[in-house]
Amino acid sequence: MSKMKATIRNGRTTNAGRVFNANHNTRQETRAVEGHIDHDRTAQNLNFKFLADGSIEKCDSFDSKAFEISQYEIYYGEGQEAKNQRYKAEAHADRCKTVAEVYATPKTAPLETILQLGNMHTDIAPEERERILTVSAFQLIDGLRAKYGDNLKILSLSIHKDEAVIHGHCRYTIMGRDRFGYSVPNQNQGFQEMGIERPNPDKPLSRYNNPLMTFSDELRETFYALCERNGNIEIDREVKNPSQKHRDILVYKCEQLQKNVAELTAERNTLRDQNGISKVIQDSFNEVEIDIEAEAVPERTHRGQVVEAEKVKIKKTDFDWLKERAKLTIGIKTAFDKLQRYGKQLWQEVSRDKIVSDLTERAETAERKAREKEAVAKQLTDNLDRAYQDLHEQEEFMRRIGVWQRFCNFIKEKFRERQEAEHSDRTR
Image (cartoon, rainbow, N blue to C red; front, side, top):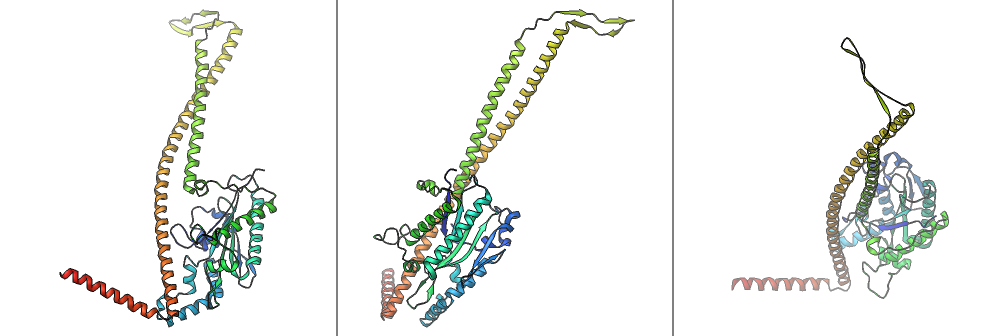
């Protein structure tokens, strides 16, 4: 068996910056309105709840969002209530959040890992692939729980059989302790307590150098090793160049469509060659000179009426020869006509597919540009959130050392001086 691809991806939000909808994984009513789902197979999906007491519950369809919020209440409710009380004491009640709001915030929402083994073209039985994926996913989860304890809480695992390729969704939260000792959904603090550093500790924390990258690499290598051990297979670990590694799915589909057009074009050319062969054969029959001795038998009439039409009398051997040649000629002519009709139909299909391909490529290019703009907007939003968080941390620091009020008065004074200067300039 050739090397098999395996996929593992981490994320919290869509390209538009919205947190993932947990009910996509577990709730039949949510999946029923999604077009890429084979709804006849949705009931075959496997869903598991991971409760705060450490137990695991196998479920049918359930409201995953409500369940995960209830687990957030258990894990973070006390710490969030304490933080709200501090905000109120500092006259910043507007910063208070419910646990449900913490759950829905991109920075503190659950982290979701997608696990997939192979693709639509993988030469392995679906039942065997399901077994390998499910066993490996549970072993991966057991290993994470044993290694990282309270810093990593699994919320749910769903194995989807109703899409093109079977895959799993594992959702979990990473927690750390704040300076007051409360559990909080803080990924960086959690990674620090878990002993996970950024890939290059000598360089500053950034989008391309953060502990999540190290954690993702650990998940990926562990999942690959488990799949190989459980399925006696070999995982292809080759990393493509960045343009291949992060290709758009839409671009891939467009390339597949273009590949299909090329195959149809090749088939059309083959048929055109076959039509040419048929024509050569037909022309060859037309050029054959037949030398048959025939005796004309004139028509017979009676009282001015034709009672027997004119005939031609030939030898029986010549008749049999002509009969066979007539069958062969009719057969070739029929085949030739069918090839011509099929070739014409195929040409029309190729032309139509080429037009569809061009239009699809244009639409996908426009959509890709729109997503790029969304990504830029999301980056700006993230920068603004970080700046706001930094400002909030600076405020808390200055409050602790007793200079916050003095700083606010200084800013007000500078603002008043600037207003007076601008007013003076306008009145000159």
